Length: 229
Image (cartoon, rainbow, N blue to C red; front, top):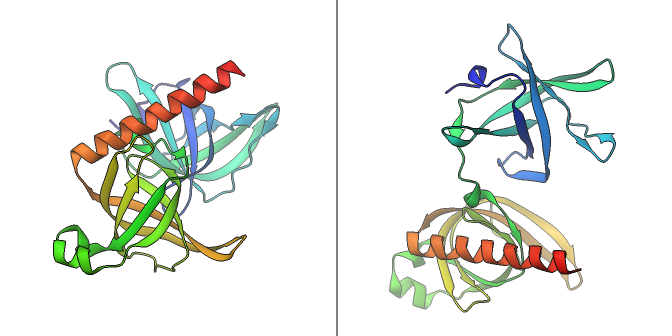
């Protein structure tokens, strides 16, 4: 299925992506309004409260929608222009990929602080190397089924391969190999730390399933607390 096959009027969920393909900010609601001859699509600009959300030209976004048979589908596109049609703010976007099946449970990020340890990549396959390696202490800023954001005192270069061990609050331990796709220095009370965006490259199905179950259980508890307030 390709983007031009989506029906006019389809409700779209819109996410703004950074250079690493990770979502920035909230998920917004949009709608497909029109196809143009050059292959671009006209969609409604997202609105939060009563204000139009400004998305600069050249920014990549992810658009997802529900197909009656295939379920949740999505594709990425680049914003090319913005205008008003009467009182309606619209954006012209250029799809840059075919539509794919979206596994949302993999992408939901839970904001939570958990203890973590970072080891060299060879520690994943070599027990002796793991024993000799001194774990670098870290903590999570957020986690998902496909990656984690870590904060640590040690600097790691972008694109480094590492092994991450996570201690979940239910007592389970998760181990995964990942690649650092973002590394930046941040200010904390004790001085300088480093924030690492890590995408998992190897994780056992057992650990991934346990991690996803944990994330959604924590989400359920948070929603329950919000309702009780």
